Amino acid sequence: MSAPRSTRRPAAGNADFRSPRGHSWRARNQAAVHTWYAARFGGEPIAPYRSVAEAVATWPEFATAVAVRLNADDRLVVCAPHGLADLLGGVWRHNPTMVDGTRFGERLAQVRPADRWPGVTVVRPPQPRGGMP
Image: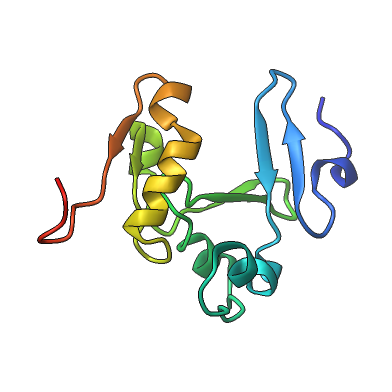
């Protein structure tokens, strides 16, 4: 039995959830990212995204660049601008669209995907020419 529709969707803004099995996940309001992105990550302000697909395409790893929504017919609609191969294959790979290699390295150290999810393959971005090994 599923929950009433009104309790399955997050309110406007960001929301954190925990599944019955204890897995956590986060919903982000992609329409508001441009209002806080520069303050949180530095750099120049970004333009508002024109669509969810445009926003999701910038997420830091290809495996995390996936969004799911429930349509009016109670069917799941998947938005995966870079495909689902990395997610389904257990590959944690840098998406250079918005996040540079340095920031990806910081995220990798913070999230520690290979420690959290045994069997995950981490693909590091190539080093720039002349960089340290």
